[in-house]
Amino acid sequence: MAKNCKYIFVTGGVTSSLGKGIIAASLAKLLQSRGYSITIQKLDPYINIDPGTLNPYEHGECYVTDDGAETDLDLGHYERFLNVPTSQANNVTTGRIYQSVINKERRGEYLGKTVQVIPHITDEIKASIKKLGNTGEYDFVITEIGGTVGDIESLPYVEAVRQLNYELGKNNHLVIHLTLIPYLAASGELKTKPTQHSVKMLLEYGVQPDILVCRTEHKLGQDLKDKVARFCNVEAKAVIEAIDASTIYEVPILMLKEKLDHVVLEKLNMETDSIHNLTKWRDFLEKFQNPKQTVTIGLVGKYVELKDSYKSIAEAFIHAGAANEVKVDLKWIHSESINEKNVNEKLSKLSGILVAPGFGKRGIGGKVSAIKYARENDVPFLGICLGMQCAVIEFGRNVLKLEDVDSAEINTGAGNPVIDIMESQKSITEKGGTMRLGAYPCKLAEDSLSRQVYGEKNITERHRHRYEFNNDYTEQYKTAGMNLTGINPNSNLVEIIEIPNHPWFMGVQFHPEYKSTVANPHPLFVGFVKAAVTIKELIHS
Image 1 (spheres, rainbow, N blue to C red):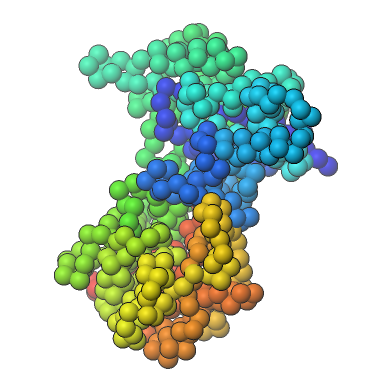
Image 2 (image 1 turned 135 degrees about the vertical axis):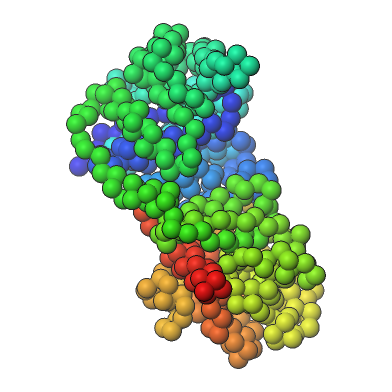
């Protein structure tokens, strides 16, 4: 039977980066723990069709779903919290909205009418919001609106919410506004005025928030909550304190104490007596916050100045660390800072080395040097996407001793292009949404490390790349001691490379970090961290 879907909208005020995605995911987790089915979508106000062509310095990592959507990194939070896959429908951008409307206009679907922001753009936004709710799969659709109330680019989304408030009917929707209550050290006071102004601006657009979630560095106190409620036209119990947490994974527990989900259910006229099942979440949090030891792993990448560029990798290490009951001390190392002269100094104190994904030739030399160090010194190694390709290059240069070994991405005229562009990519000229994207199958070799780590023969993993291992070199690499242990059964694409006479050496063409969640830490990261712990114990025994 189709579910009567309820819609929850999450907006933000005062400043960006308050954590709308974490609040949305935390509320979703609490509702899920009560037995409800939930999905979360992100509406992004930028005009790019998707973040696929954005520099990581601009927008952090580009997250990829099973169905091949290149999306905002918040979808990673949604999946990590809920352990439920997202899709193309979970991320909508202004670019995609306008592209759809313009395409309809070109096809004559508006019957000659003047195409305007209202109603055509807002109608398209509303249709995108209701698309997930109309599937009949969900009790709740939580929609996070990117940006800050007052931004010009966010206005059509806020207007769409205003219209939906009337169209969805009573008890079928509510608006949560995330705001800031700053602390002024000079006067020793928490100030509510920024929140008041933010709500006033939202009211000017015709949207009355039902719940205020207030980010703060200090406890709010009931008097302050009452003041906020009085000036912002909400109930005092609907003013929720969101105090700074030591980890994002603590936020659902903090929201539980503040009864955020209880207030939501009450306002939607739903029963509030269902019991939370957060046993697994609390177990994870207990292990994460009380590790038995620390292991140091280096993340070698070219975008390390902005840690959000590798957000899913960092979170996967948190999940894997908890699974091993250790704290992973992640050292962020810029690949451009590494060379053959200083590599020992830079990497000698690490118990594991991960070489991160990326595009282009900048920093490649440092990645290759780091991999050579890991291979020659028996340091556990995991290479992801470009990291795997760099491992192939390093092996070709230093073990096979081939001349002019490179990737065709870096050197189109390489004498030995051991990494080459995929055949399906050769005729493509447009950059956006044209890479090999989404989930593809992979068959693991019988006696391989990957088969041992995964515990199964057939897997599926998410991809985002144009270049691949050049199969013309298969026999040379196998003979020299690099095994090709993961193969796509349909395209014969090499997915995984391993060096069996090394304690733990693996490169993967796919992105395992995208599938790591609190409930299901990714086996590759769990195995890699375990190997790093073993090496550390051997060194100090």
